[in-house]
Image 1 (cartoon, rainbow, N blue to C red):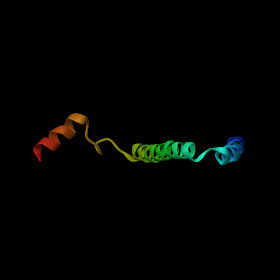
Image 2: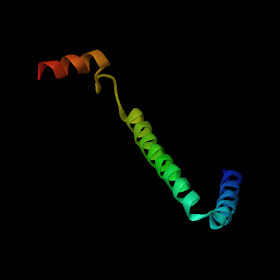
Image 3: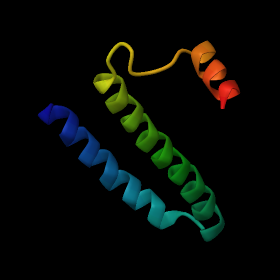
Length: 72
C-alpha cells in the first residue's frame, strides 16, 4: 500500500507541473473532465457503501418497484 501511495504522490507532482503548462482553454476542458470524474467516483463510493449495507428484503426488484409505483 505504501508503494501505491508513493506512486500516486509522484503522479500528482507530475500532474501539477503539466497543469501549469496548459493554456487556459485546455485547462477549462481538463477541469470539466476532472469534475465529471470526481462526481462519478463520489457516486460510486456511495453505491459501494449501500451495497455493503443492504440486506435481503431491504430493496425492491425492478418489477416490484414498478408495481409499487403504479399502485400510488
